[in-house]
Length: 352
Image (cartoon, rainbow, N blue to C red):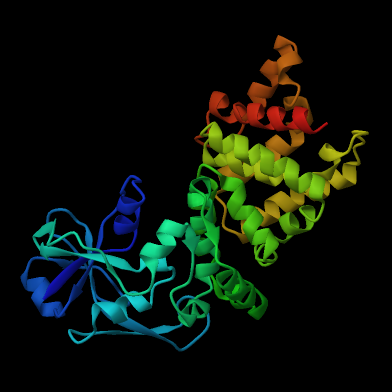
């Protein structure tokens, strides 16, 4: 039996980034051996176990074969005969397909500290490139979103996506495979990406490869307008720098759907406003966005122009705006919500 620290923990150690979670692969073990060692099995589709004290995840080495559509359309084979190299080959990116052997199931001290790298992950880390491990990348549409999220996560470190990987991402989008992803998984990846330091990168990348059309079609259509797209991306950049919360960032993204806010004449067509609010609501429903986030995004869109001038408003008008936010039945506080205005105002004043 050999135990390996794999994936993100190894990657982030090498990048000198904080390590949030540790995942392990166990080669040469059986389910019964893991249970006898006190581990708790939690994987429904393949053997994943929780450590009895640390509760970190230990998975038996496995291979996967595509048999259906979507990210669930796989048959999984886990056995003591599956090697570490075979297990790592099924992973998405080379920088996630690296490992370090540790002492035992109960001691995660590295045996030597040497990084095991079959697929060029170390070179890609050094070159700051996100590259797929193998052609199997094309079998899982979720990898389109994951790669875009990693791009946003490491954008400020200078990472780029390899051209051949971008080609596979576009092919996955064009194949219609994204339609087989659940809305919950779409939101899980998208919300995580939106909370990164440079959230605009994820959304821009998905727009460029056409991946917004399935679950975020109104956003894709709005971003065909370069001025709207660049303005909102700037706002999202400031939101990341200011550490705004997720409802605030979502509201800034959804303000893209109100085109009247971006014209120099500031003309307002009631039908356009109504359509924008419907689009925000429909997008939230389709992508399973939390209701409170959608409610705040609608309120923000309704009040965005006034909010952009909040510093010049009278005390009475400011109080009215605060009361509007209070009416939202959610856990989003007044003060927290309206701090999104700073990000909106900042970019709004720089592009006029």
